[in-house]
Amino acid sequence: MTLKRLSILLLACLTLTACGGVDPNSPLGQRKAIFKQMLKTSEDLGGMLRGRLAFDGQTFADGAVKLDSLSREPWKHFPQVQEADHTSAKADVWQKQARFQALAQALESTTGELVIASRGQPLKASALAAPMQKVEDSCKACHQEFRDH
Image (cartoon, helix red, strand yellow):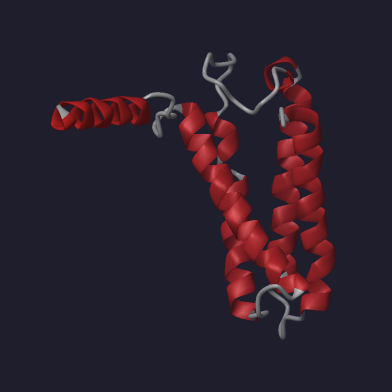
């Protein structure tokens, strides 16, 4: 009897783990993966500037390039019509496309500025704080307007 109950419990757990996940190949899954990479990269860069992580100029410069590259990717994974999947994006993403695209371009611009700032040698955290803050402010502006927290 115990083996039967254990088998049923195991089957139930396996069934539940298969439900509710996001298809990693769907537009939602792809943009979520990109946003997670952007967040991790941004947190590492900010951590170096705020003393949470040791500052390493080359690592920072490489991270700035990575963040700039990533900043250009998620937008192509927002379909023209809002998908039925549960998403953190507000309906305004699809209703206010021009504004959404403007904020996306602003982020791309600020990450590009960060790359340029990270080319100066020797790199100093103090010189990178302002460009990094602009990147963080761009992220925040879009989240406040278009993300359903």
